[in-house]
Image (cartoon, rainbow, N blue to C red; front, side, top):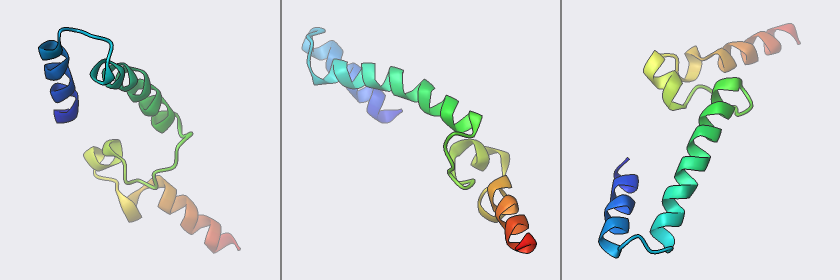
Length: 76
């Protein structure tokens, strides 16, 4: 969030010109929702080390990915 705030500040100070600050902000608003969607829909495997897993207290060994991996190893 600090990075986004810094880019917005420099955008205001620069007079809203089409430059790297504006492109960085546009990239954030396109990529962030897409990344959250991919993470929540299971298209990206962070192995339980993402922000949502951390906030829910299910990181690392407690994550559903680790449990799935253990069950696969047990069935082999």
